[in-house]
Length: 101
Image 1 (cartoon, rainbow, N blue to C red):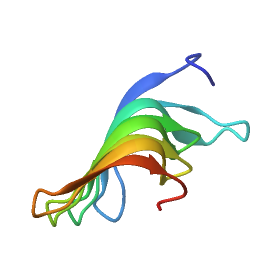
Image 2: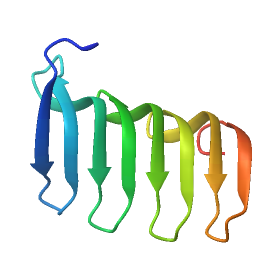
Image 3: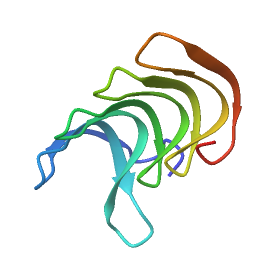
Image 4: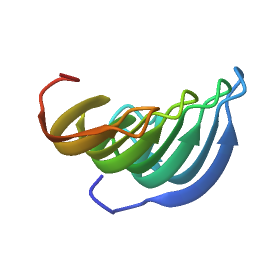
């Protein structure tokens, strides 16, 4: 799917989540998020960044309703690689993450 056949979409999921960005077709023919996009969940979580096969993968920013934020690398919907996690009080950890840790 690497850039081929991508289309820009705006989609509202049945649960109220919203996605705006690039999508492509998986091997099975299903529409999946792939490329750059923004996903806003019904409960206020916002992810803006790269997607691969319907998963947060690559660089992105995840903002939580608590005020916490992670900016950095993702793999399989997890913080994975170099990033910065900023806590609601403004303190931050900058370093390496592996599977959300």
